[in-house]
Length: 257
Ligand SMILES: Nc1ncnc2c1ncn2[C@@H]1O[C@H](COP(=O)(O)OP(=O)(O)O)[C@@H](O)[C@H]1O
Ligand SMILES: [Mg+2]
Image 1: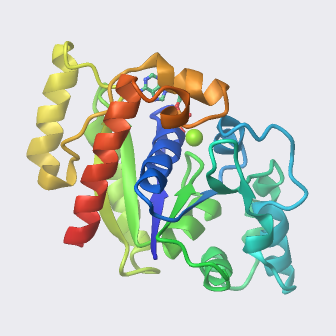
Image 2 (image 1 turned 30 degrees about the vertical axis):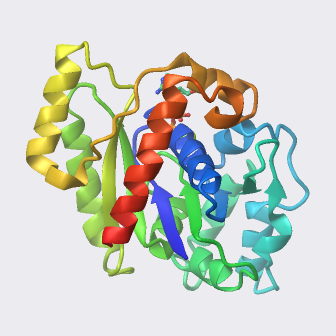
C-alpha cells in the first residue's frame, strides 16, 4: 500500500484534477485505489458528482477519532459514478482543523485512521487544501510520497522551494516522506514562457520533474462538471492521453522506489 498526497500551497494548479485522473488511470490498470478528500472545500467530492453532504464522511470519522471514539474510515467510503472509491469531504472539516490544534497526537490522526482500514488498497490518494494547516500536515505525515502539480507560470520555482522548506519540517514527523515528483499542468508548448519554465525546473529538479506534461484541455474541466473522470467522460481527449501517460510514468517511478 502506498499513500500519496497531492500538495501545493497554490490553488488552481490542477491538484484535484490530477488526483482524480491519476486515480482513475491507476484503477483502469487494475490497481485498487482509494481517494480521500481532505479539502473542506470538497472540490474533488463535487467534481466526482457527489453534490450532497454525505451522512458519513472524512469529518464524521475524524471527529470520532478526536473524541477517542471508534472511527471507521471504511464506513465513509462511497463509490462514485466513475466507479472510484471515495471518502468524501465536508465543510465542517474546516472546524475540525481548528479543533485538532489542542488534540494529543494532532499531526498523526490520519495515520491512526488509515492503520485501522479493513481493506488494503494499492494506492491511497489524498487531496489537500491549498494551505499547510493541520489537515495537510496530517495527510503528509501519513503519506509515503508527495506529488506536486504546478502550472508553468511566473516563478513556479519559488513555490517549489517554499514547499521543499515545509517538507524538511514535516520530515521530522515522517522521515520516510519523499517528493515523488513535480508535474507541469495546463501546459502549452507553443508558449515560450512555458517551455522556458520547464527547462528551468528540469535544470533545478532533474528527474524529480515528470517528463509527462498535462496540456491545457477544456475536456478536463467539462468532465468535472459532469462528475466523471476524463477516461469515462472523453477517452479520446488530450486530457485522457496525458493522464494515461502520467499514470504510466507514475508506476515506473513507484517501482524505482
Ligand atoms: N489541463 C487543464 N486544462 C484546462 N483546465 C484545467 C486543466 N486542469 C485543471 N483544469 C481546471 O482548472 C480549474 C482548477 O483545477 P483544480 O484541479 O481544481 O485545481 P486545484 O485543486 O489545484 O485548486 C478547474 O476548473 C479545472 O477543471
Ligand atoms: Mg483542489
